[in-house]
Structures are given as C-alpha cells and as structure tokens.
Image 1 (cartoon, helix red, strand yellow):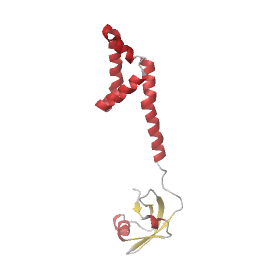
Image 2 (tube, helix red, strand yellow; image 1 turned 60 degrees about the horizontal axis):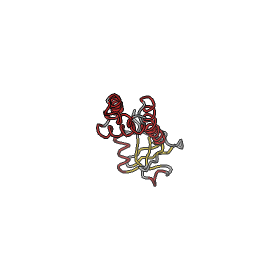
Image 3 (cartoon, one colour; image 1 turned 135 degrees about the horizontal axis):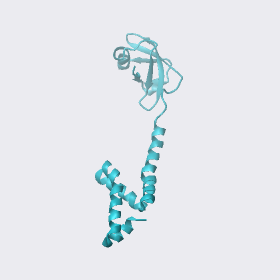
Image 4 (cartoon, helix red, strand yellow; image 1 turned 120 degrees about the horizontal axis):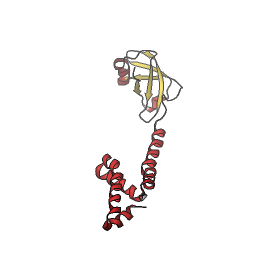
Length: 155
C-alpha cells in the first residue's frame, strides 16, 4: 500500500484536531477512499511533515488527530550532502593523486586532463581521459623530439 499524503496549510498544521474541508476533504474521502483509523502523512509545503490518524469523515469535512511521533522519515539531505562531499573529494583529489603516483604523471596534469576530457566528451571523456594521457606520455617519452612534452606530463 502506498503512503498517503495530504497538503495542509501551515497555519492549520498545529491545530488539534485538524479539520479538513473542500478539495482536501474530497481528495481524502473520494480519491484516496480513506476511512476512520487510517494513517496519513500531512505536509505543509515548507518542509514540515506530521503523522496523523483519521478520526471522522463526514459529508463536508474530515477530522484528523496528529500523532506526536514526529516526522515519518529521516531527512535525506544530510546523507546526500556527505555523499556529495565524499564523491567530490574522491573524484577530484584522491583519484588524480593516486593515478599520478602509479603512472608517474603530474597530478595537475591528471586533474586538468580529467576536467578537459570530461568537458569535451562527457562521461566517456571522464573514463578515457587518463588512459589517453598515459598513452600520450608513453609515446612522448620514446620519441626524441617529443621528450620535453613527456617531461611536462611527468612528475
């Protein structure tokens, strides 16, 4: 069964009991076919949520009583922020540094190469940028006229 949600204006969110009329009542009674005793999540459109239970459904209004259990789910934003920070550090700092150490390439070159190839070719550029740079460095190291370029790419 899906989670039932209903918009309640912020000024009525803290009322006891919460009385719903008009379109909200019609949505509960006719569309969701809610019955007394059913649980529902109320939200105010400003990030506030509250659990409630339907007490009474009349012809023109529905009466709800809010549970004091707090919000129904944990806020996912902190976890998303931590994940974003970790992936950013991993993708833009840790990976270029480790790649530069193992391939004997300059970390700045790897970083700029990932940015350039990612901008140029999108996801494929991000995946293939460093191997292409490594091939270019290997070729430049073995051709006498291109050795200065190989030294520039190297560490």
